[in-house]
Length: 199
Image (cartoon, rainbow, N blue to C red; front, side, top):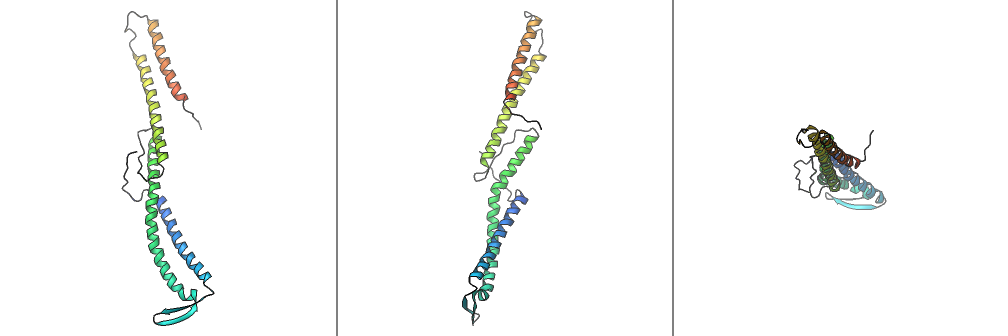
């Protein structure tokens, strides 16, 4: 497939925003969970801390909780920003193809089969994009054959019957009917190749 460069970071703001927010919540929840687990497992231990020229003795969670929370908030903010950026680029690989699929399918519903899906090297959904392109190509080819058959039938019906004086009117009519029959058979074969549903 042809390389396709995208210029916008946010392709589907709702989709990407939801995943970025979820990833940020996971980082924050992980940090809080770590602090709670640390407090639980160290609740029966004593620690000695030298802080601002003062020596303190007490339970480990009580003495270290402020330090842990301070470090945790820094980790939540910096880690959250890093995770948000990574999630943005990861969702970009999914949101971009979804955008292309949607636009191509929108064209197809308006009977425009000229749209093609071009994805970047690392985008997800390449197989689906190739299948949609193959379907468009197959359907375009089938419809083109039917159009050519319809043109042949029209030309046959519009042709001047007195082009060949040696042939009788009956022979000309028979030849036209045979041409129409052949073209109709070709169109029926194309149409019968499709499984259709009416709902």
